[in-house]
Length: 321
Image (cartoon, rainbow, N blue to C red):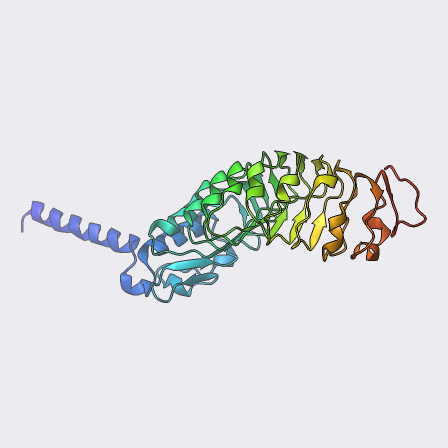
C-alpha cells in the first residue's frame, strides 16, 4: 500500500471520528427530534449550564428531560416549564426562537417569572404562534414592549408586570385577533396615553396600574363590552371626567385611585356587583350614589377626594390631599 493511499484512509478515519463525536446517534436520542435536541443543548450552554438543567444530559432523549414536555403524537417539544427559574439570570437567549422552526412544533406555555432575567423582551416570541400563556413578570426586563406580541392569536394571558419596561403601550395591542388575552402591564415605567385602539377590544382583565400613563382612559369603558370584569388604572397620571363614563355591567373590580380623575361618581355604578377597592381616590366631588354595594365599602375607598359626601363618608368633611 503506497503512502498516498495510507494517508487518504487515515484522513477518512479522522473525519469519521470527528463526525461521530459531534453528532449524537439517532438511537441515543430516543424519541427526541434532533433539531429540538440541538436547540435545547444550545440554550443550556448559553445559560452557563445551570444546575437547574442538570438532567439535560448530552446524547439522551430530550423528551425525558426535566421541565421539558413533548407532544406524544409528534414527539416535538411543546412546553418549557419553569426553565428559567432558580438562580438563572441574564438575557433570554435568542436560541429559544429555534424551537418553533417547524410548524409541527407547538409551544403552549412560556412562564419565565420570578427570575433575574434582564435585557429587552425578545422580538422572536411572536414566532411561538401557538402560545396560550406568556408570563415574564417579576424580572428586570427593560426597553419597550414588542408590538408584534399582538401576532399571538391563541394567547389567553399576557403578564409583563413587575419589570422596568418603558415607552408606550403599543397601538397594536388593540388589534389582537383570535383570543383577547388578559393584559397585565402593571408596575413598570410605561408612559404616554392609553391607545384609543385598546378600547376596541373587550378585555376580561386589564391591569395598567403603577405606571406613568397620562390622558383619558374612558376609551376602556365601552357600552358594547360584555366580558370586562377587572380594570385597574391606579397610580398613574390619568386625567378625565368620571361623570361621563358608562360603567360596564360585567365589571366586578375597578380601581381608579391615585390619578387626576375629576367629576362625580355616575349613578349607574349602583347596579354593579363591585368588590371593595379604592375606586375613586382623586379629585371627585358630589354625592356618593346611594344604593347597591357602595355603602358597604369602608370610608378609605372614598375619603381622599376633593369634596365627596354622603354614606359611607357620614361625619367626614371635605378632604383635599
